[in-house]
Length: 102
Image 1 (cartoon, one colour):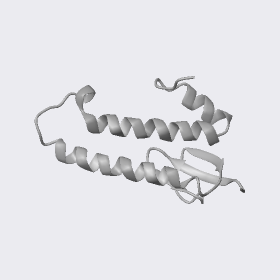
Image 2 (cartoon, one colour; image 1 turned 60 degrees about the vertical axis):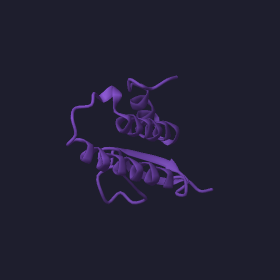
Image 3 (tube, rainbow, N blue to C red; image 1 turned 30 degrees about the vertical axis):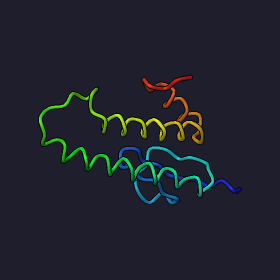
Image 4 (cartoon, rainbow, N blue to C red; image 1 turned 90 degrees about the vertical axis):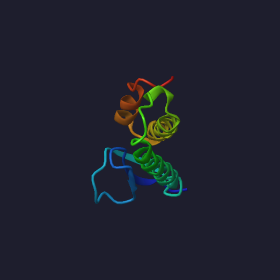
């Protein structure tokens, strides 16, 4: 399969095949595999929406909040993909994150 540039913004939860919007990472990958980013970002946005409703409830500590754990889990997957398909700078960035395991 041909590898193309895929432009990923973790801050904006976006993944594009064209550099039209802001992005933090340029990955070389099969465009079909880029769909994984879209799926993870959609899931994260849904979980964030659920968190907005939960925010009106009594205080729940972060470490006990299941929805936050679900978002964190998906964020780790996103960074694992960035590490796998990114350039050396992207790999170095991901490797310095506190939850990166060698």
